[in-house]
Image 1 (tube, rainbow, N blue to C red):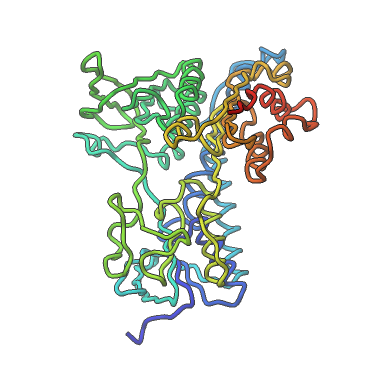
Image 2 (image 1 turned 90 degrees about the horizontal axis):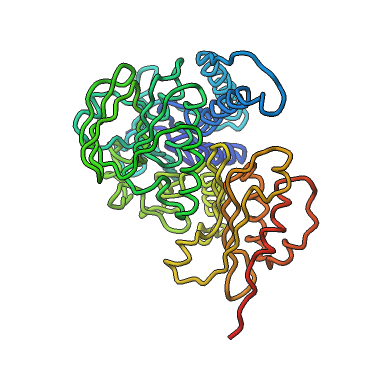
Amino acid sequence: MSNVESFDVLILGSGQGGKLLAWHLGRLGKRVAVVERQWVGGSCPAVACLPSKNEIWSSRIAYLARHAGDVGTITGEITIDMAKVRDRKRAMVEQEKNLHLEMYSSSGAQLIMGSGEFIGHKTIEVQLNDGGTRQITGDQVVLNLGTHAAIPHVPGLVSAEPLTHIGALELDYAPEHLIVLGGGYIGIEMAQAYRRFGSRVTIVEHGPHLMGREDPDIAEEMQRIVAAEDIGVVLGAELVKVSGRSGDKVTLTVQTSGGERFIEGSDLLVATGRIPNTAGIGLEKTGVKLDARGYIQVSDRLQSSDPDIWAIGEAAGSPQFTHASVDDFRIVRDNLAGIERSKRDRLVPYTMFTDPPLAHVGLKERDAKDQGISVRVAKLPMSNVLRTMATDEKQGFLKVLVSADDDRIVGFTMIGAEAGEVLAVLQTAIIAGLPYQKLRDAVISHLTYAEAIGPLLSRIPERTTA
């Protein structure tokens, strides 16, 4: 195998954690190769986080323009140029691509565009995108494989050529009637965006309520917000079959508690979950073990069952957020340098970019109950937040969990304007183990949304003594 190129570190996939690791090691003088099949920088800057939030922002501007008269700004007829919405997004993606290429160049890490497959323990063969092949081996290998959209095995669904979030962000028109299969985070974000672009939208969800991973009160509030924008919701719907083709005419046959139902639309978006990109790349030729769902089994150090092969990001079972992958990078970086670092007990927040957004960190009420953890709970409606008197952004509420045994904050959820920004304050308090009274009595700038933290924490019930 004299034609095999040797590197200190071989990274398969250029997602957030992998590229940060490549640039870091490259600057240290390590020989690093990154093999990427399609998107420079991975999915986040190309087809996921940044592009989706770009178009969601465009949809919010459309919404504000339509409602400008409510606050005294009189406008004419509002129309949406979806080609311009898409082109604005594309321009941002191109800018991100160029920035990534500059980072590879300046760091010395080598980016190889092509599809990699293991042909040996730590050796891959790359089918280069521009033709030809390369064989590459690394002393250390990092798997940064990501996930892809799951398409359920339902008669007619594949042949209907449904959209995933990738295709939905490339449309140059607003569908006449967009059916969204799946009532999770991606589905709801896209549903609200396209409703604001002018589409009729229906969400079809298999479970009994939207956002099945959230506490019931959170899910119910989000459903009220969705319904207020005239987005249809069909719950408890088992998809039986699909006919037609997305982009023309498509019909879903679903079974509900009320019997069989037919839902007709012009376009279909599938947002029913993710599948790790671990199949078909020769992992059986390595010492890497997968779990029953195809995710890479890793230790708390993100080391696979082979000590020289590490895994980062979604395919390693990490929370499916870019910021989790960033922390994965730090864990692998330090362990490669001989500094012990673990994912154990890390605190990973998230924000769903609906309007208003949903933000969460720490325990949920259902988690606390399942784990037998006693908590005190307080809630504050957004209508009680003084800032909303000026903005009219009164949908949603804040919810905090405090330990029943001491005064530490252990969880926080907010549906409301600027929820993701307020979240960071509570996350900091949780990390610091701060007694809730310290934050309750803090002097917070008026007139801000974060000012709601004081009134919220003032509602915490007193700790009972035995």
